[in-house]
Amino acid sequence: MLGALTIIAAAPQFAAAQTAATEKATREPDVIYVPTPQAVVEKMLEMAEVKKGDVVYDLGCGDGRIVVTAAKKYGVKAIGFDIDPQRVKEALANVRSNKVEHLVTIKQEDIFTLDLREASVVTLYLLPDLNVRLMPQLAKLKKGSRIVSHDFDMRGAKPVQVHHMNSDNRGGNDDEYHGGSHTIYKWVVPWEPEKPAKAD
Ligand SMILES: C[S@@+](CC[C@H](N)C(=O)[O-])C[C@H]1O[C@@H](n2cnc3c(N)ncnc32)[C@H](O)[C@@H]1O
Image (cartoon, rainbow, N blue to C red):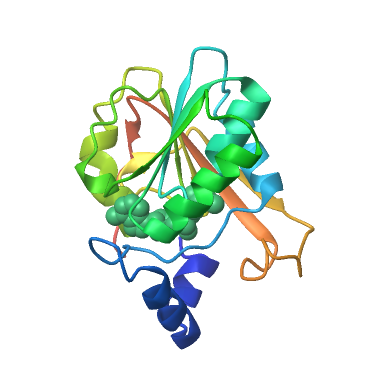
């Protein structure tokens, strides 16, 4: 499924903004930064059934809002990874201003190099093809781990839950590019393979 992120990724003003923000990055991010609205963050964590003892990873954490919310609301350990040093800086500031340094770690890493096995919850807001590229890493998560993805599915893995919602902060900073409509996908490891759609 394609979402707002796919469309805006092609917009020239985004290309310019992204280049400026990633001057010091080891390589260009695979997808531009668009934040998940807070209401959607809350729903993603609720769908993931986050509970004490969980370890939440956000792959491509942006300003760190998902990991900060996980720590503040559920008191769990959370790690956010981003390849863009500007995002890492913002996420670290977010962690500090919310006083969750004891629970949240932010790392500048390429998500495709990570061993995810310590995580029991993984959150994604990437692109469909990037979700598919992550599948070999995600398949190694412990049995019962939950994966939730904002707006994008994971071809070949059947979700156990798909939730559609509107966020009503349209016009606010967060929702400038979303158009207010969101889908959240959830999988539980090991996921059920999804049969490819039959050709006509
Ligand atoms: C659409 S934003 C999502 C931000 C955050 N997860 C949220 O939902 O608010 C995607 C993020 O992934 C980061 N990113 C893109 N490619 C990456 C890679 N290979 N490794 C780590 N981070 C990456 C971008 O810098 C950006 O911050």
